[in-house]
Image (cartoon, rainbow, N blue to C red):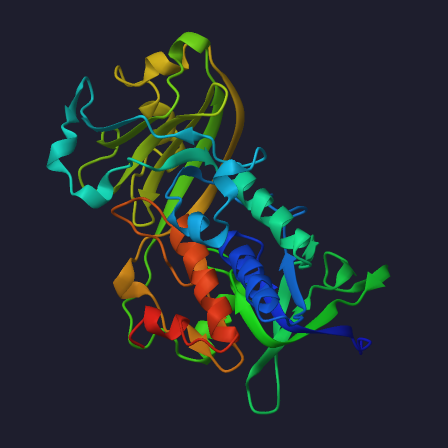
Length: 368
């Protein structure tokens, strides 16, 4: 059946995804406009039911991006990051034991000194509140389902998904057409392997000069620890057992806030084991003699999984195209050796804001 036309709204900038990259874009756009005494209309659409709902990470966060975006955040009593890294360990595990590697053997850029342990979801909620205070419109619960193009093929915004569709794909009685959100510029910060980002990369051949992107699967659990097992600011990473020799991956354990432990397990997507899944390997990992003690008297209070961009610098596509750009994990700005990406996401959003307001910053991030 013929569908009714969508209603639409016009903005200066449309941002897809209320993650660190998208919200940093929106915040910086408002900051630049205020500095120039101008008004700019910015909207952020987010598929999650609320800002931060789809943000899942065990996070040791480099605050460098946040320090530039919001210089006063450390003095804010509502700040989301309060636990600074105090001790950093890296362990290589065997089935029965393991070895702690001295930190002096690692490059300086892998040190976590000066970083914070915290919830990336809470950081995102904090950025969302800062954005709204500056006048950014945020629409959670509205996934972007389609990219809009003009007659010349340039991006002019997005459309949100239709509601009230039956399982067979037919409109029900409560069918509601999605909205068109049109912008002079559209920024895509959907995260790893975003559905619209995939179509943009293909349409504009953004990856023709880049290596193929690589991915990992990260499984995370959040635990409330017994007081005698909690060490604020302890950061641990492991490699080795229980993964077989040909499988890449590793784990993390981060102590933060009030007795919380973020524990996770990462496997590359080329993982092959006919008998055990990555989830089952994760459960085995928690029984290791050097690991299991921390879970004594603890209670698991949350869990989840997400895709991780692991291609690195050589897999970053061209970032700009007619009418828009890519930021954050949509572009693959994860620094794999550092096991970090949120600071790059924030800084790429700030660069995108500078690009949109006439400062050709984002184009310098990639030779393409």
